[in-house]
Image (tube, rainbow, N blue to C red; front, side, top):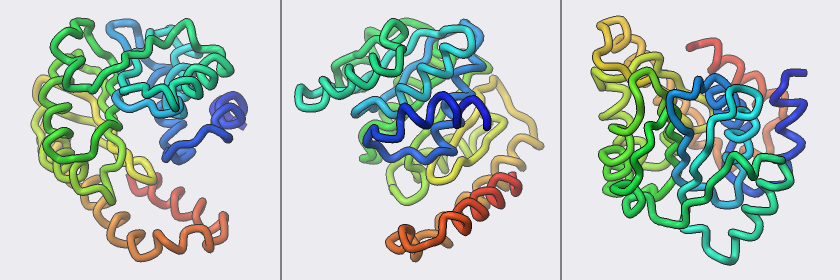
Length: 234
């Protein structure tokens, strides 16, 4: 049993959210690898499921501080704080009660890992990209959630990550997260890999869309096998 399964899954099992185990583990590992050149910033926290993955990953690594941007409305902020405290990461997490576009102008810390799961309206996703990605250090990571079935993130990430000349090590994590490393200039091989991963992601999206409403009827073994195949293809 790996660290994520042993330490993190039990803590997030009862926290509401739309994050697969694979996505949670990917966030955990990215946070664990942060070296301290910048902070971890997430846009969209809700009740803290992704925050816990990031926080425990940071705790297992270099202890990078986490800034959690969300309106943090009263009806859910209590749950967010309770979940973060129960996970033992409250000292690492700074809640930022704001819309992401409002918070960006005054945020001047370099970012080593950016996780975007805010508004899915295409204009808002573009605004988040324009305002926050420039704050990511070279060699830092970006992760965008909901890049399959949700049109706004899918279009923006398809255009500005998969077809970009400033990202490398692009990969797709089942169910909907795209991850990439920021670079000053990628290579032809980087761009070819990104296009390949885009094709894999598109195939996953097209194949899984008709089955989405029947997902609960699929045997868990079938679903796990499909996700292993997806990982092996990248």
